[in-house]
Length: 246
Image 1 (cartoon, rainbow, N blue to C red):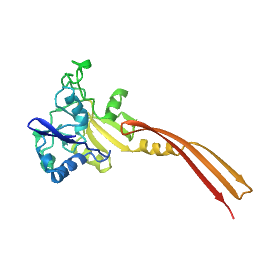
Image 2 (image 1 turned 45 degrees about the horizontal axis):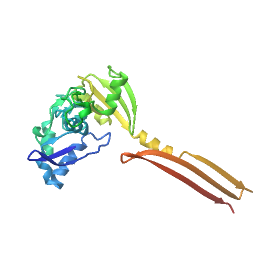
Image 3 (image 1 turned 90 degrees about the horizontal axis):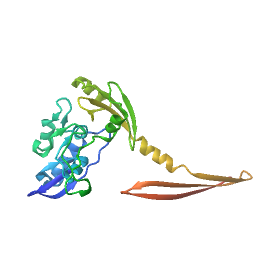
Image 4 (image 1 turned 30 degrees about the vertical axis):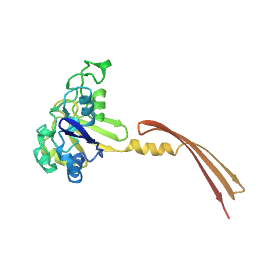
């Protein structure tokens, strides 16, 4: 998320989507935004969505390391912002929040949510990596198969030297900081979950009838209930086919 402020007041923001294998896409999108929408050059702070929520609840601005790894702006070896890509994008370090490991306290809830006032705020990190932490798969060589829209194979490892990172990236494996301190994450992903959604859309109850090997009729009825634009929608589908042989 890129937040645009003028005189301390938020006047606009933009969301960014990413492909699992293109972690640096955010840097290229911000560079494009600067050219296509020059007002974004006046942005005061860049925050990811989770970090924006923490800020909105009254917490401090932070940049969680496993999420920062997806921007293209993080030097995963130095564990610091990468000045070369910042310069290429056309932004300075002052746009970015201080880096922090997942779970680092980032202030407490204020008046934005009175029922939770005083609760400690923190950013949990990238979803698949948080799942690895919950499953206890963060030891040397541990691998977790985490499923969502994407299926992610995640391996935790001690920080790798630059030549090993380059080797992994050339093989199509993403390398970033883990949601636990002093660990790298090797991540390979595919949109298996989304593919299974398409398979589920083809499942249902069907019947076929044939007469004298000449005429056939068939029908397939399916019901799909899925989230859409913040709500859930139900699709009822009826597929009918006719076959006539002559």
